[in-house]
Length: 294
Image (tube, rainbow, N blue to C red; front, side):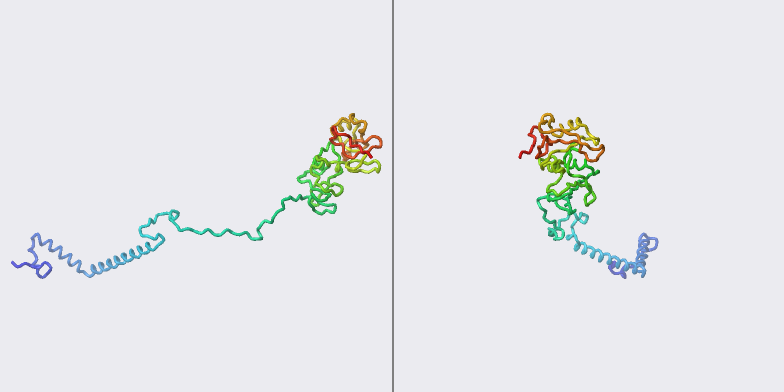
């Protein structure tokens, strides 16, 4: 029996007899062969081959792009947060140098006290000679406001200064003349006599109690005309001394003023005889009476 070459279709021999088991298989393979040999099938296979080639090329391009991208290596974790990636050292920008226009000018170690004016209404430091001084935050502008600013008691102290309006429209102390010091709390200081109101009977003029004087004025806390008894009671608080203990040098007198006069002075402490005083008797206490001796 002659053997046929399986690679040679011509040597396949005749088809199997009809009705044999091999006849059905042979028929199926023949149909498949015709299907694959059909022009439409070949065209479809060619298109699939092209699409497959394009997919391979696209995949290769994507892989190259991934390797060349920000991650740097093909096996880098693409889901890693940028905050966890290691970056190279950065150089901080140089600190900005303030320009001369924004620099703060040097300040003096000695503060300047504002709110004082000369008699000519020129603004000056309150440590310089001035006549007017602003009372900051004053809600009223009365004689009581002035005395409180000066550190005194409106129900006892009588001063030369009066309330006035500053060039800024606020309440101010008018000292009556230029003085080289602030009026703030001045009545609590040893030099308070230069602000207190006294009288020199020799020339019949109002003077500062730091000058030679014959009488010193004080208040009772009431605007009605005072009695001698009311003045003696107020004198105890004013002098911090009982009038009877200084009766040889001083006497207490009720002034002849009209009730409701805005001037608070209601009483006077007079030097007896022709004596004069050289200082105020405010808070005299146990000190000697400041009688002038020529």
